[in-house]
Image 1 (cartoon, rainbow, N blue to C red):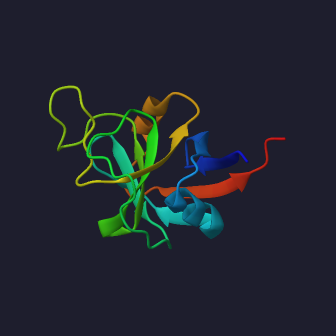
Image 2 (cartoon, helix red, strand yellow):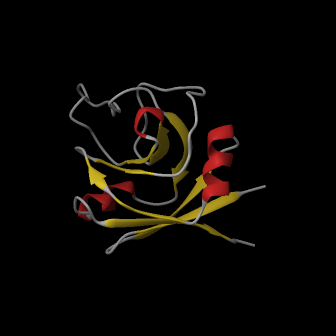
Length: 126
C-alpha cells in the first residue's frame, strides 16, 4: 500500500511517499500533525508524537529524504547540507531512520523560515 503524505508550510505544499519501515508506520498512524519547524542548515525538523528506536539508521542521507530523529522525537526534511556536513554529503546531527522521500524539488524548502508551522497529513492518491 502506498502511504502518501502532504507537507504544508506557509509557502510550500509538497507530497512525499513513506517507506515500509516500522517508524514510517508509526508516523502514518500519528497523522495529522502540525508543529513549529526549526531550521538547521538545509534541514527542517520538528517534534512529533512518535517514540521510535533506531531502525536501519543512517548517518548520511540524500537530498529529498524525510526521516525520524530519535533523540529529538523529530521529523526531518533534508534539502541540502547541514552544519555537520562535509563536502557534498548531507549529514544529520546523529543517526536517523529514513522514512520516505519527497516527490518534488526538495530545495524549495529553503523558503521555509525558522519556527514556521509545518503540517503533515495523509493523502489519498487513488
